[in-house]
Image 1 (cartoon, rainbow, N blue to C red):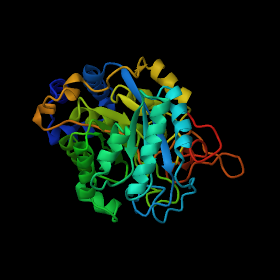
Image 2 (image 1 turned 180 degrees about the vertical axis):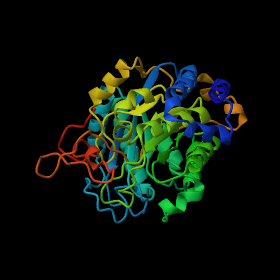
Image 3 (image 1 turned 45 degrees about the horizontal axis):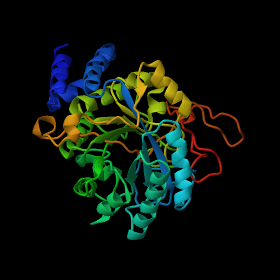
Image 4 (image 1 turned 90 degrees about the vertical axis):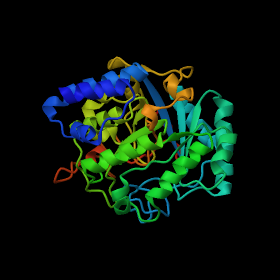
Amino acid sequence: MDLLNTLVEKGLRRESPTREEALAVLATSDDELLDVVAAAGKVRRQWFGRRVKLNYLINLKSGLCPEDCSYCSQRLGSKAEILKYTWLKPDEASKVAAAGVAGGAKRVCLVASGRGPTDRDVDRVSRTIEAIKEQNEDVEVCACLGLLSAGQGERLRAAGADAYNHNLNTSEATYGDITTTHTYADRVDTVRQAQAAGLSACSGLIAGMGESDEDLVDVVFSLRALDPDSVPVNFLIPMEGTPLEREWHLTPQRCLRILAMARFVCPDAEVRLAGGREVHLRTLQPLALHLVNSIFLGDYLTSEGQAGQADLDMIADAGFEVEGAGTTTLPAHRTGGCTPCGGDGGGACGGTEESAGDATAAAPDGGTKAPAPSGLRTDLVSVRRRGAGTDLAPNA
């Protein structure tokens, strides 16, 4: 297929595909899917070999957010029956982080609901970062606290933060349909503030919110222009009690095409398979490892993922290896200060805003929820009831 040969050649040169080529990837047929995966896999192996970086999420403060992001179970007006709690203490967060590190996580992602941190919040998170690094000095710490104000990125960096996540989520053209309490420009500004503070930028998207192929291509090209080091690709978990609870449009095949497109556009960036992989990729999750070089281990913010050991088994069975703490994730040219991706950037980032996951979800009476009508698969979504904010051991 001439298209795929061209995309591989460009990816190996860190050259951007055209918008038309990126759209053509999303338009490929199911019969061509394995060819698409194989082509994008060549690009992935060129820059990352067969390594898979593991990341571990800690929800420092759950629910009660004043923002109205339609995809989020923590949003203003959400009726989702999620865990709600205020800030974890530094020692509590450090214990949860230790479980993730013991499971193989190289990066711990500290997330808190809200529009953005107050200066007092930055102090809290700084103490938490210090507590985690005291226990695990080699672990990377990424903060995801919402919109940054002047000087806050620098303070987090001084406390030991390595990265900051703030996703663009969708295209600028459709952003106002998803969120009204802040703007797309606000998000772009926060990513730039993080970069200016010397933090590794992590910024990605959420697919499956009713967007068009053009919207998906637009947001991935916007991410390339911003040049984050890490690009998380989330697949919407239509949580009951949120405005998008009936948006069940994704198939495993479409998810793989989206990941392949992201890899071709951001060939040498850390492309992270994030929230929703268990729900939408299901048994095709191992194929995604040929496209991405990073995943989240265990549970997400308000929903459960598959067992941490199942993640490790999947990686090993697919012929990949967990990236060790002593290995630099990004290719040398991205860490050595040379011009990235043909001069216009080529980042990819991680950090999820919503997620979910077990194959079955417990009903209030202890039974199993039956699949919802009209193709809705609420049986695939489990609200997180363990780990941070609970007395139960975390999943790692």
